Image 1 (cartoon, one colour):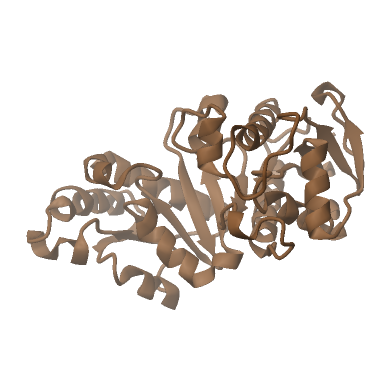
Image 2: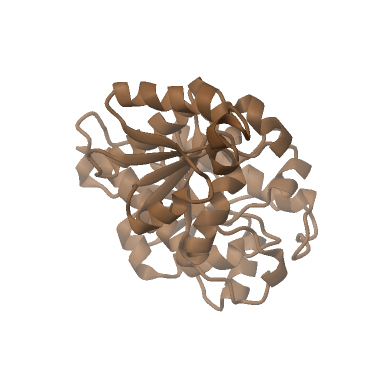
Amino acid sequence: MTSNARKPRLAVLLGDPAGVGPEMAVKLLARAENATTADLLLIAPRSALASGERFAGARVATTEINDAANLRFTPGRITHLVQPEPSAVSPALGACSESAGAAALNALALATELARQGRIDGIVFAPLNKHSLRMAGMTEEDELRFMQTRFGVETFTCEFNITGNLWTSRVTSHVPVREVADLITPQAVRAAVHIIDSALRRAGIAQPRIAVSGLNPHAGDGGSIGREEIEVIAPAVEGLRKEGLDATGPWSPDTVFIAARRGDFDAVVSMYHDQGQIAMKLMGFEKGVTLHGGLPVPVATSASGSAFDIAGKGIARVDGLQAAFDLCARMAGQKLREPAAVAV
């Protein structure tokens, strides 16, 4: 059997059960067309699925299995791998807790293992809560590094944030702001540009136009407000251009997204989390996607968070999670069509 004889197999996770994740995931899974795009595996406790169905006002038709060894896919129907309940009492809505974090973390670990074994081709997860994950025992800085460890990936990984046709990556991610400057190195800048250039090429852009942001206000103003642009970022960009990449910068952080929104660039590489995230979320919070770059399979989620303030109200929008699903399915399908890919 050749790889192009089947649809991509995607795991769908409910995210943090105390937030809007279960509601969003149920709304996604209830759309019949999604089950025709990919073969779907839901990994969740029964209680979290029931909660999501109640708040979404929808039901999800599933075939239950209790052991990953029995994993089978039925066209047009969702396979539900039932997880053990994380505690005797369901996590309270709208609050961080060890039990909520454990449910989300266990699902993420299992999906990662199934992807590592080649039994699924991608992962889509509803919003998580990092504090709950840490309460449940996650020691890494975020879920990307958690998965990176379990995949055994030693090369650079990075979150891509995508709104419409604009992508971003960043040199540092979920670290305290006081540590950022020390982490801006030529190697880190080059890695952040290379990883998004590669991803954009896989997405069909032959020569991605990449803007590299500065770190300091006004990109350092010629060295009067910091020298990272002169000593680190500009030399890294020059080296990237010599390698044939269409990278420019360092651009002033307060104006680079104006040019990007105008269509001057396909991607912006920012130096730290909020430098890019604030701009991207203002440009399209409800439809934004976070893609975890550098992993063996596509892993995507919505750019929105667990939204404890509206959990249980039935008003969570699914646009971003749908966009994440569409991107993950497209990338997983493309990988299956590659000559070296073999069906499992």
